[in-house]
Amino acid sequence: GEISSQVGINYGQLGDNLPSPEKSVKLIQSIGAKRVKIYDANPDILNALRGTDLQVSIMVPNQHLTNISTNQKLADSWIQSNVLPFYPKVKIRYLLVGNEVISSSPKEIWYSIVPAMRKIKNALNTHRLNKIKVGTSMAMDVLESSFPPSNGTFRSDIADPIVKPMLQFLSRTKSFYFLDVYPYFPWSTESNNINLDYALFVSRTIKYTDPVSNLTYSNLFDQMVDSVIFAMEKLGYPDVRIWIAETGWPNAGDIDQIGANIYNAATYNRNVIKKLTAKPPVGTPARPGRVLPSFIFALYNENLKPGPGTERHFGLLYPNGSNVYGIDLSGKTPDSAGVNASELGSALSYACSQGNKTCDPIQPGKECFKPDSLVWHASYAFSSYWSQFKKTGATCYFNGLATPTAKDPSKF
Image (tube, rainbow, N blue to C red):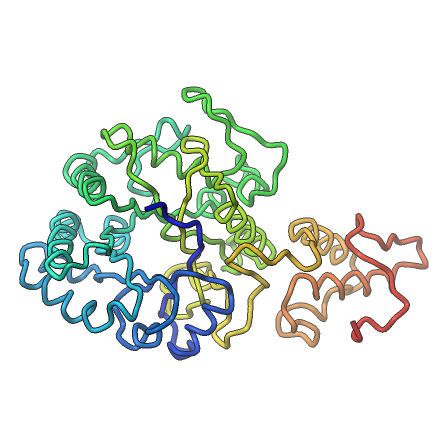
């Protein structure tokens, strides 16, 4: 059957201050997610999902792959413990065998991925659960080249021994290549060469034409996805469907991590959701008009994730359940009164760069930081700027983003 274009959310649990599974499921529903992906088969979370309409993706953690890959009985017992007690009341639809194994696990585990996928699939079939699709998630580092997209090629150390049998399995079982794709990372290392607007889907003018395929690109996300499609084609599997297993943009980071802020995160995620939920579907230049099912990363800022600061700041929500910025995964809700987040971000930066401590009170921890939203901050900054600089002939319309009012705005 044709897969729907509904957007899901990745529910990671690497935090010591996160809401209960029950509260989390309500929050997942409140942001318009139709699917949820977890990184294990946590029974408390699965119980909280019982009876909801959310489609669920569960995962065999990386450390179990080696044992399962050589032992069908272990695969059977994993399914008996982690799927049978919950299915069908929990709509388990996808089962990922390992998470970014090639990026994060010792080399000896790599060769267990496909045998473990086969054994898990056999175990599901034994229980007539053949509707549950089996896959594994891969990051972009499985490619040895990705530019131009037509040059996309899997790394020579994994192409034949691992990727090819995996694609054969996915093709045979009509499953998906689960891809983690983050334009933030190539942009942040190449920000002198890649325009930020191109990474955030806001450029109307920047176009890149692939010299070999002649396909024209208007954003970095499409380039990255298509480089994987061309790489699959080179191995003889041009038709395996892609599932965006993770994508997102950090809302904060370490002092030296450029571009990781709330404005860019809101802009990227709103725009990628717009693209992924478009009707009719837009697909990518290499596969136009095709649905790209997806999960946004992530539900929460997770304070125990290792690595640089950005790793702990991909959440749509703070651990207390409040929004980092307004977002609706169904693609229905417009930005506040249709305001353009990226233009508002630049106008805010302009208002705040004029000195005179215009924006001190909306800095984190200061008295006007809450509610922490782009629209509120911009509203404060524009008013503050206007009251300080109107005598010197300041403007007050900010390219039509602001409206003067004689009423007390707190009554709106």
